[in-house]
Image (cartoon, rainbow, N blue to C red; front, side):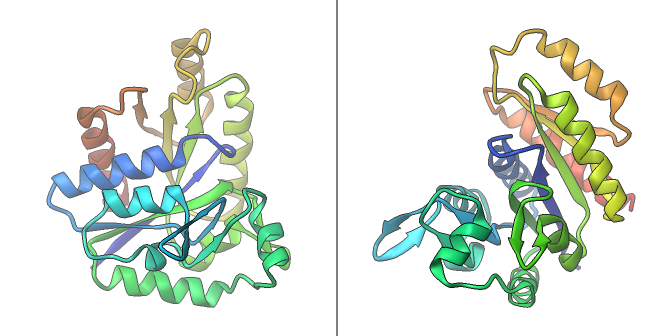
Amino acid sequence: MSCGVFITGTDTGSGKTEVAVALLQGLGRAGTRAVGFKPVASGAGWVDGKLQNDDALALQRAGAPGVACADINPYCFAPAIAPHLAARDAGIAIDFVHLADRYRRLAADADCVVVEGAGGWRVPLADARDMRALALELGLPVILVVGLRLGCINLALLSEQSILDSGAPLLGWIGSTVDPAMERLNDNVQTLHRALRCPCLGILQGDRSLVAADAISASVLDAVDAL
């Protein structure tokens, strides 16, 4: 039976894609057929006559072969703006039923689907529905990516509380060193360990090492199995 996880972040640029890529690669090296899913992306360019998003392409490269980018990223918009605004400008309604169907199709041919949200947990998508609602629609446990930079503790605590309040299972948090020059980085990480209620599933350093990716994938699988 296929498993799935929903990766959200403390904010835009928190390192969700890097964590999702590391997780996909680690799962692949462990013999798991894992594929990525980027339901909605804004910020894309034209490649071979099709709009394609860099994050979705990164997920495609990191996951199991043979999956089209259009299947990984059903809703893709050119402007790098909030997705609900990009969808409205394009005259497109983001359909959660359609996204759930696309997810099930990927899951039918995979051992694990790594779903990457856009922006943070409460980013709006359509008609008062947001990323939180999408994660609940898909019925997936959540991983919170904390972008390690100034202000991350407040954002992490607020995001964790919102996820817990939603009722979605929260597997844990992963730190991503989006600012390697952050002052008192280790002290901030230790504060996050103490302050957050969910467990830390790993820290992805700036070098994005294979060892860290494999450790994170093993931690995620253990957390999923423990549900």
